[in-house]
Amino acid sequence: MSTHTDLIPQDGHADDHGHHGHDTGASHSTFKGYMTGFVLSVILTAIPFWIIMSGGLHTSGMTALVILAFAAVQIVVHMIYFLHMNSKSEGGWTLLALIFTIVLVVITLSGSIWVMYHLDHNMMPSMMEQQMKNMP
Amino acid sequence: MSDTHAHVITSDANSAGPLQFHLTHEHHPENGTLLGFWMYLMSDCLIFACLFAVYGVLGRNYAGGPSGAEVFELPLVAVNTSMLLLSSITYGFGILEMQRNRLRPMLIWLAITGLFGAAFLSLEMYEFLHLIHEGNGPQRSAFLSSFFTLVGTHGLHVTFGIVWLITLMVQTGKLGLTPENKRRLMCLSMFWHFLDVVWIGVFTFVYLMGVLK
Image (cartoon, rainbow over all chains, first blue to last red; front, top):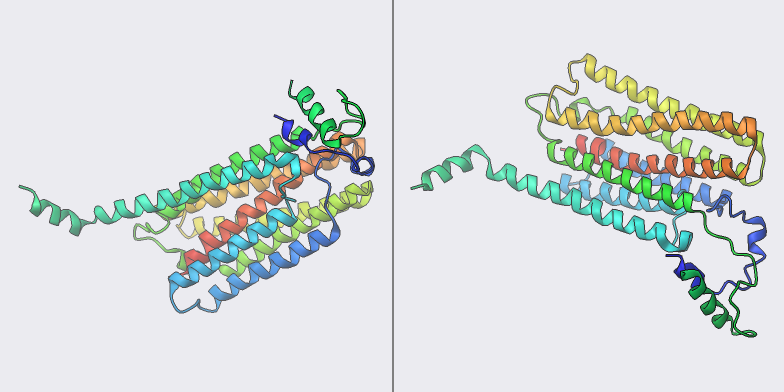
């Protein structure tokens, strides 16, 4: 399992291990990183709240899309600056687990909403009457 | 088994000197606890995905009861969101102090984080009690059932996060910043920031989109 990390030649990094305690694992946090993440998050939170509280955009569909886009960007910001997500930590396994989870989350969410929306539509009382008429 | 294999390749890649079957410098294994904890967080993420899906399906079934636009108070939610965001950054400052091995400032930052978390919870409790008091409890409609389940599960996570935070504060206060305690603090850091990520989904998908239309 750990072959992947070991394959990378580790010469020249011996000095890094001195102060980067391997006991804490991910210890690349910096004040600048946290502040960047915080300021970006505040902006990315304030804008959607402002859009909704000032009455939204032209159509509600477009407003929904815009605030969902803001949420997606903010989640990425949190992942990078607060959760220190990168392709190198734990030999890439954290990123792989994250991608796998995102795939599952997208299937669960979009699948449920899609299927149940159509179910709702096809079970409408008006629809049922039509189907009853068509029956022999 | 895989180690021997890897070592041969490593010394090949270095291509300096004869073939060696041991590492020339000390091998530092990556910390498996953090990866394991990340796996737990991902499974937790799936729980929330299911609850979000339930809300997405039932969120417009009002059963003659109030809609989201009628019951949600956005200013309250905005204050709540900022509480959680502030608690995230103060926990980050705590981690920075931990990296500098300064126990007392770290404990102060953790205490501030806990206070922000408690403020978030009290506001949420106020909101819930207010809704129930007005007869809009979880039994009112499918929309409110799924709302209480989703937001309540998140609140429960924050509650346990605060319990964990207090435990770690006592533990680090007694034992100091040992490697074990640092590892635990890193795990709680991931948990705390993860809850903030879930809250982004909650305030966008539940509150903001609930008020819409």
